Length: 487
Image (cartoon, rainbow, N blue to C red; front, side, top):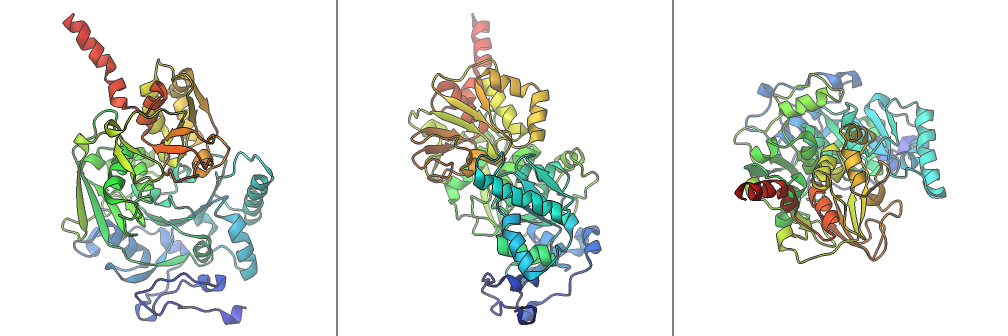
């Protein structure tokens, strides 16, 4: 079979068709007229990023990141280039059970084990024979390959990977999951790919792509209390739909974005997948640098990694200061309206979970609403922290105690109900969830009606038994104080 390998199988520069043979993936295909110089040795991939002054004038952040990855001073939208991969991440569902047999068929080794991260997060804790089989494959393969970066039952991959210092501005990364663009919050180019593409990366350390256009989502002003990045994302989905990103690069920018915490920026980048983007980017700044320094990646370079003034791209304007809490109605993240426009809608289950909506900042938001209060009778409040680290930090801050006192049931730190795993969501129930998707049956119950909102909205809805505006609850102490002063 080694003598019949087919390479450079994409002769048409206007067509990017997936390879049909696993063998073709050893050398990523590029149009012959646009081949670039051979990749540098693996050890050169950690060299400092190309200085900004050497890059094309008026380039977007996406162009700069891709130019570095393909070893060029500049790239233009529409070009097809081969990029060196700095990090390949996959999990128990997308990784070993699919890669192992293909690698065995090829007899090929992993190109650089130090650049591979495996997170076991989808089928844990194991509840049946099938989940036990899948997790056993992942654990056995990781041990056999002696992978140095394996996170078993530590939380959800998109949160665990940056928390353990694997991401830095300027990197070019791929992930075996559709929410892999979360890494773009750190100024890294990171996108999701399928198992056959991942095979090519794992063997060659390279992947080809078409340089995207950039769509700028510009947010002026700052969010008011009780409104979060999840509301920003739902507002963008409501305006542009699930194909608004056009499989291009979406960059979130403006005061409304730079004012966000690191984990809130992760929410934006994460849900760029729902917007239909290839990547979702936020230019790194001192907030990025401080967060990464606290999570195992000190002294990162941020200066080169921004879009130049006048960089080309479509621009869409939003005002964070006037944004109300948003809710996505069944069965689409783009079926959006303001919470104040929604008719009275009772709920049975309030779910705070997933990489999108159960990070430490999300748990803090929910606790602010629920502190000193009890959830409504007949409502289940389910909380699945995004990672063990977030859960431990929330425990130290007293957040977990507040959530439990309010009536929450704690679930394991894993993908859980967001991926339809664990039977947490009952058939026929009305659900308000902080997750990213509410497609019919997505959370495991085909007849459930799933609404999406921010952790603030989920907590407020659990408290009142119907989808509610957290701003009203958060304003109560101030209102009572004002009334007392008038008396």
